[in-house]
Image (cartoon, rainbow over all chains, first blue to last red; front, side, top):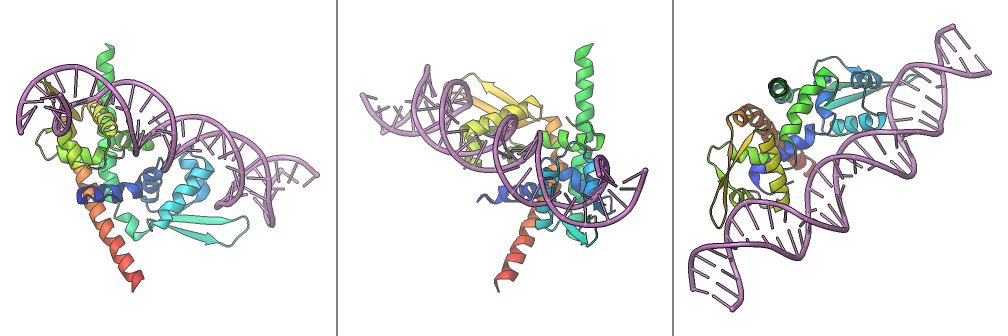
Length: 115
Length: 115
DNA sequence: TGGTATAGTATGAAAAAAGGTACTGTAACG
DNA sequence: CGTTACAGTACCTTTTTTCATACTATACCA
């Protein structure tokens, strides 16, 4: 953690939600429905099993995501957003919105430079 | 850029503002006053010259930050937020707020576990 | 004359993050 | 009997990011 107080908040916040796939995992879980391991995998076609496991473990560690194991064979594990995790909703939502506008702006610029 | 449309927005947004120091640089510049290279450096005591240069270049590249060189000796270069950069204000603000609550929550938990 | 401030660049090393592949055990399906 | 699905783990490699240090040129100040 940084010493500078202003920096602390950003570092703390970003540590929790950054990681190549974390925002997307959280976004999907924020839809409300619990998802199984492989369901998330299918939603993120390019993620490796290893990365998904690692990120989910970190999110669980920070109590943003809850992991429930059903003792069955074949195994069933469900991931869902926690109440605390839901507090991230506005953050991810504004980020998502800005990203949307950012992509559009980029495409507009690209189109302009091409003609 | 990812292919999956949902992911795109996050990737695009995060690419722009993530980097160990970018949110903090932007935060300071969002205060409105243009800052010189070394002024920013003093605000971020732990950053290396190299990292500051790299991050500023990237922010400039994405038109979030404007760089103005005054032809003087010793050199004077001022960085300021662009109009487009200002559109990041709500994103950083919610992030900052959440970080604040996140830090408090962590401290509360730590205090509990210690008694 | 030597030190300080300015805004960087260059180079190489270290650390962190992500990726790739193979492997586990069990059950149901064909 | 071979294959697939499930939810991972183990091990190793590659890529990306960050860090550390030295160096540039010029002017001002004591």
